[in-house]
Amino acid sequence: MKIKKYLLYLLILIIAGVIGVSIFFAVRDRNREETAENMEESSDIADDGGTGEAEAAEQTISDEEIVEEELEDFSDYYTSTSEDFNNYSFICPQGWTILEEKDGKRVLLNRAGSGSSAESIMIMVEDPADFKSGATGDEIVDEYLQIPEGGPIDGELIESFDIELDGADARVSGYYYKSGLTDGKESTDDSVYTDEIDLLTYLTDGGYMYIIKYMSSGIGKVEARETFEGFLSGFTTDNSISGTVQEDSSDSINILILGVDSGLGREYGIKSARSDINMIVHINLETYGTTIVTIPRDLWVPISGHNDGKINGAYTMGGTELAIQTFEDFSGLKIDNYIIADFDGFIPLIDYFGGVTIEVGEDLADGFSNCYLSKGVHHLNGEQALALCRNRHRSGDGSTQGGAWAREGEAAKVIKALYEQKTTLERIMALPAFANFMLKYTLTDLAFTDLMRLLPALGNIGSNDITIRGVPSYSKMVGKASAVVHYEDEAEQLFEEIKNQ
Figure 1 (cartoon, rainbow, N blue to C red):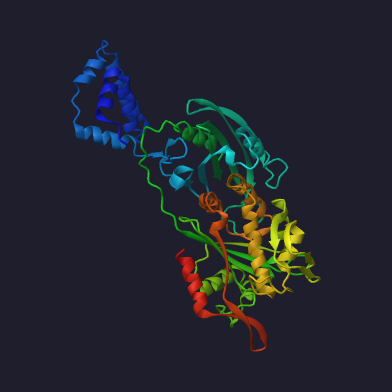
Figure 2 (cartoon, rainbow, N blue to C red):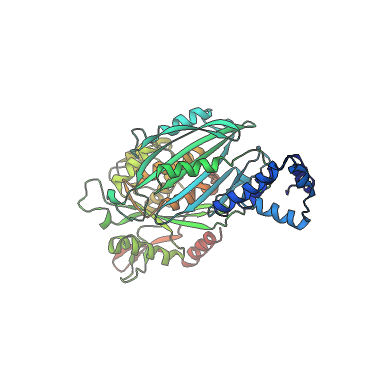
C-alpha cells in the first residue's frame, strides 16, 4: 500500500528534516558522497532563519514526482502477508534473492558472493505452543549454543553482543566452525575447509517468536556481523509499508543417495564398492511434494561405455560420474547432488540423531545381516538400523515384495522416519551442523549454497508430503545372471509423474 499524498504533505509541513530522510531513501543506492551532499542541502533549508517549514510548503511537487519517489523509496522492501501473526517488514539487501514460504512464515535470503563465499539469512515465525518441549526463546538459544560445544562440528562460540531490534533490546549469539561444504568435491583435506559463521537472534510480538538466523561461508567474522546488524536495523513488525520485492522462482531438486557395500572390515574402500542401496529423492521446491524412489540394486540397465549390467555396478566401474549418468539415463531425471555412505558411515549418522523410531511390518531373524526384530514399533540405534536396512532374507509384510525389494523400502522408511522425528525448527537450526558432521562419513558434492536452497523445503515438508515408491520390476535370469528387469511402460509413467510433481 503506497503512502497517501496528504500524509506526505503533512510530514513535510511538520518538519523539514523529514525531507532529508526522504532524500536519503531516494538516493540510498548512490554513492556516499552524493548522499552526504543531499543531506547537507536539506540541513541548510531547515536552518535558514527558521523558515524551513514555510519554504517546504511553497515547493511545488507534481503528482507524478511524488509517485515516482514513493516507488523508488520502497522498491526493495519485503512485507509478509500472513493472517496468523503480526506481519513484519525488512529491506532486502541489494543483490540478494528471496524465497518465501506460507506468506512469510519462513523467508530465506541468499547472496552468492565472489569465489566460494555465500551468505544467507532466514526468518522463522514460530508459535511457541508448537514447540515439542514448550521451550522459551532463551532456552532455544541455549540449545542452539550447544551445537558447537563438544559436538561433531568442532566449532567455537562467538562472543554474544547486544543490539536494538525493532525498538527493543535483543542479543545476537552464534558460533563459527570449519566446514568442507565447498567445491572441493569428495575431499576431507583440511585445506578445502572454509570458515562458516552462524548467528541467531529473536524477538517476540503478538504471542509469536520471530527467529532470525544468519549463515555464511567464506566470510570473516567482522564482515558477517556488519551484514547481520545492517539487516536487523531495518527489520520491524510495524508493517505500514507494503513490500514490493518479488519472490524468486523455484523448481525442483533430485538427490541421488547410494549406500555402498564397503566397511565393516572389508578390504575394499568406499570408492571401489557396489551400490546396494539406490534411491533418488525428488523435492519440488515450490509445492514441497517429495518422492523417494527406490531402485533395485540388480536392475539390468545399459551402462555407458560398458555392456549392459546391474545398476549397482556403475559406481564400481566409473565412480560417481558414471553412477550419476547411469541413473539419469534410466530415470530421465537430472541428478543435482549425490550422497554416498557405506556401512561404517551409516551407523554414526543414525546415532547422531539419537537413533530412529520405525515400525517393522514382520518378524525378522536373519543371521547374515544380524537383524533380529519382532513385528511392531522399535527405536533402533545405528547398528540395529543398518542390520534392518541390510536384511534381504525376508518375505515382505504384504505392502511390498520380499527380498531385496523389502530391504530397499526399509532404507527409504528409515530416511523418512529420521526426518519426521525432528521438528521443523530443529531441522533448520541443526542442518549446517549435521551437514558438516555428515561430511566425515560420506562422499557428497553438496555445497553451502545447495543446503541453503533446501532450507525453505525443510520448513514445509510434512509427513504426508513424503511418498515412497519403487520401480515396477521383477526377477529374471539375463544370460547366466540373476537380475531384475523393469516394466518399461510403468517405469516411464512413474518418472513422468515425478517430473510433473
